[in-house]
Image 1: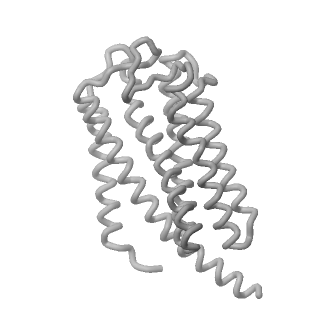
Image 2: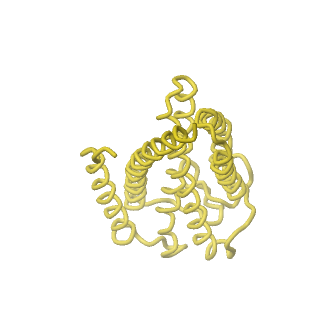
Image 3: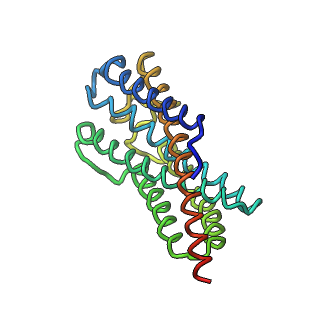
Length: 232
């Protein structure tokens, strides 16, 4: 295994510092929202993890297209890594959403259009990982993963726009806050600044995690090549 690149070490440190700054701003800088109270602070992590989840699925699409064009296995590693990270962050997004919903909607869960489409999206990508495991041939597995990542991405814009298309109780905080929606609120400048810092911090964390996952995938790929060589 190659020595960890200095740029990756720098990215790790930057991600750690960014996360510490974002967390500090959430709890020490951003004011407490007057209607929802302290639970509103979940918002900064809830939206940021959802952003990283969808970013991971978008990167998987780009990697899938790149693989189908070049047939380089590196792009398969990028795609599967991005989806794994996206799945974890989307799960955190769903969990933090339930924590937020409990005091605001008086329930942990409801089949609201946003929550429903987010669950479908999570299941679509969970199925991606399960189906990949059933394919032994690396080339077939990579080709399947690339096509699946492209087709499965349909669930991402459906989830993102669901609160703008359907009648829902989920607030549209960015670009369309509706004061009549339960849980909706307007951000003050400190809230907006904290929100942006959280998005940047989680984005840097995503880059760091994906880079590590690709390096791990390269190592696993070598092990698999050796296994196939000895089986012949």
